[in-house]
Length: 354
Image (tube, rainbow, N blue to C red; front, side, top):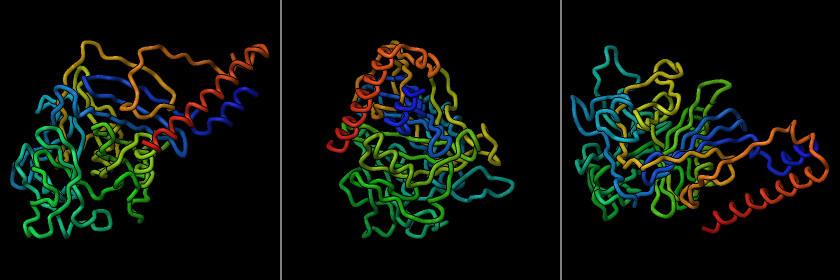
């Protein structure tokens, strides 16, 4: 027990965290992460190397009586024969009418394979949550990713201020990390605990997709927007991030090897495991490796783009077993804990400097 107490004292918050890291596709790292503090949380982080061979994207295309035909994220992935898909834009009408016509207007800039079909919105619905002319994230045909802002001289709202061609573009309700600083707004809506979805840029030409489940007491209770922004900045080194539609829309699907939902959405009446038809999704296409690797880690080395995958097995010792060791063995455990703590500090300092 003294050794366990020392470990917990040295590593507050870390000892309770766990994650499973997989490399399901070339250039793709998937992290399934659980936390017990500050509340039960289940998160998924997908780190994509935009320079990896075979990586490509597609946003839900224009179609139907409004901007898009609504689909669940699972349906969209299967339809596109993609490897990963995540929900994207806020959409209207919401709540849907009864009967639901199955079509939606997107809130904010949207493009699919070069077709710019939804403009920036200077007067968005639900302004308690959605900022006017919220920035978008564009992935051009060469996988160059960048944040884009409205060109205010264009009255149509379809043009951007940056010298880039819109190709596959998503938008959310606000930019929550800008130039390496948290810029999430304060407010009642942002401070609610909810399922959340985000998309972000990280150093070394990496794209981050993020989901956290919520509205599931004791299992995963959701995050505030500021908490999500701080976690993405602190643990995954993102420089820019946009909050996408969350709540019951939050869904992440991976075809590894067959299409399946990896998070636990609350898409219909907040029932866990139910899927919502949403206004848009982002599909990711990737190559399958010869063999995927899996490792289980404590949450000490967060950012996969800054480390090489490890195929070495890990071992976990139970507190009961540790309490029965001799004094010399306990000393080795303490020394290991101190070394681990030093490594954690070093990683954090490295991230701040890079």
